[in-house]
Amino acid sequence: MTRHIVLLRGINVGGHRKVAMADLRALLTGLGYADVATYIQSGNAVLTSAEPDPEVVGATVRAALLERFGLDVAVVTRTLDQLRAAVAANPLTVENPSAFMVLFCSEPVDTAALRAIDPATHPRERIAVTPTEVFTHHELGVREARLPAVVARNCPGEVTARNWCTVLRLVEMAEGG
Image (cartoon, rainbow, N blue to C red):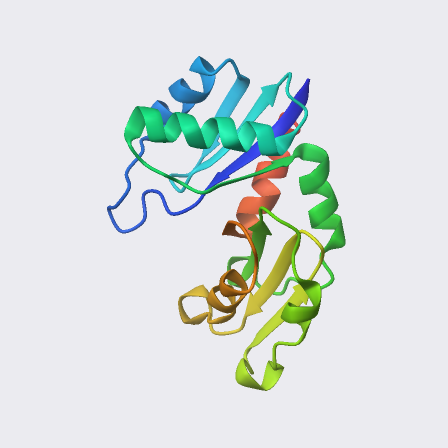
């Protein structure tokens, strides 16, 4: 059995694409997943599955969201081991966890393209790139952040972001805490 972290992009933002977390838990449980838990209203879930491949879990969840709620929602999924590895791979100092984002990409990151971003165009933001995640720090806070949009335009597949506090909490939840 594998613990998975499921990240839905763009639900319950600004009153659009609403999905109640109780409904999401019921949907995931109905798909046969066990130990389902959600965190905050922005589409974070942890679950246990006999399926070891996070891409298969993500595709299954995406199809079920479309069928049940009529929402074509981007889904990025990581196993617990993958999420732990992402946390460990973070090369930046986390000075303010709420101003620090991890962008999760469904396909391998074009590290060369993202490393080529001119830091002078984003003087109050820092970026670090790994093969599957992009880490960004925003001195003025995430509301003023410009790098996540640049990253999303330069990454193939789906991209969704979570702040550092949420990432750490999802690891804790997936570990049983």
